[in-house]
Length: 503
Length: 90
Image (tube, rainbow over all chains, first blue to last red; front, side, top):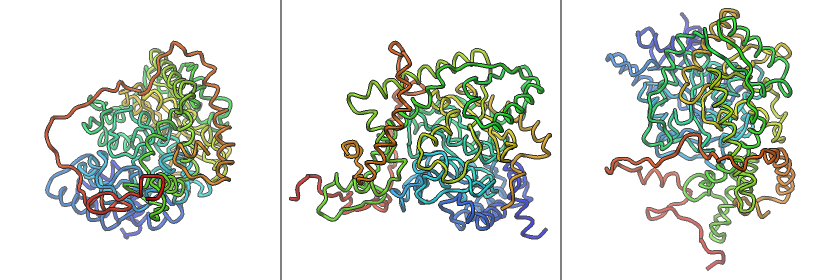
């Protein structure tokens, strides 16, 4: 086989297939890593999924893993497989910008726990992926380093904030990626790029070393092209971490066994009444309903469930998130890390901080910091932040009542398919509506998956199907997801991503 | 302008106008949450109960000072160098 055809073959393989071939010595991690680096060189000029790659470092790490494997040590079911990391994860010695100019050139002095776990598992980092600045956005247009383009149509958004991670796997630059999800930043990009993404239960994956957006909502999770690959990555990164005080000290649900089972017979699936209809694109609804029929055909019972307070979720979220973010982002003051502006020996520390933040932050970050500062200011606290916290309780209760009746809840992941770059960039309210179906899950802290449901007939773009399970029942996502995926693969003759136009 | 100062953002005049309008729109859309009667509902600050977590009282290596120095905008005598902290020049 020629190098070119071997490479193009390697980048289209699943992570599971690659790991097996590497473990058997049929191909080396170095070859697999090189194939993906070549692919990045070939297409990332168009996609712009990566903010940083260091081919020599990736290849050196791949050779180390190859040496381990030839000495008989197979660190994990993903040993030797390359991965793309969202640029919100602290990586020792590797630039970490969070998509912000304020951190341009900053090199973290330590690794996030996820990064340590991936290294221990023999997973090879390819580099850092683009994102909306500090994870604030649904399109990656808020990146300080230019937007990422959707591989399905380069003029369209790849979702956000983790658009770089989703676009990297959708364009075969990486088989796996890490994302973070505060209000939908893993699931919505997965939906609009025809890939799979999971927001694990809050506390299921360590937040240590992940630059905080909203600490009570943030959760990192796996991104891949298939449900099984997502499960394999989930099992590598999840589990208790003493360095994160909100990490759950309990066994990780067996997501791999669930992904293998794919049996939904007798399961009760609740369709959320409030997350359909008005505001949802017709092709999104039609593909969602077709998936429901498939699940019913596989033996699941489909019922409608009402979650009455979900209509207030967006409002509560856009008070809670900015409040937490305005506090978390106070640390970016130009004193200890990142850029500093206006320090001429005349200006005071307060003036330098304000000038640095003005120059370093983009528009959406400024909007949310001001919104949070306002919501937390005395006199408004009870009406805004306090009331939002009560709504959060009511939404959690809606979930509890729903899960007393059904095993999982489902909805479309996003109300529309990928829209054109620029269409909503200075219209914050229109942008916020992208996350209307994903936000309730973050407020309650339970878990959810997005996987492809098909292409919307009107525009030929991917539609995401969201599955929601109770806290620490992440395995149910994989059970339902793999059942639906297997049926769709049968129908289409392959994964949806196989239909993505070649770049 | 006042909000910009509280948020430590040195906004330009055109930014103040632009954000005032946008924040007004956002707050207008959010206000519907006040329609929900929730006097008796306890607030949720966190999805899981938060408790203090302690580790064993054993000294562990910290991070390298050189690494912090490398990432600092200004560094002198093993410390972060910052602008003057008082308002008037000395």
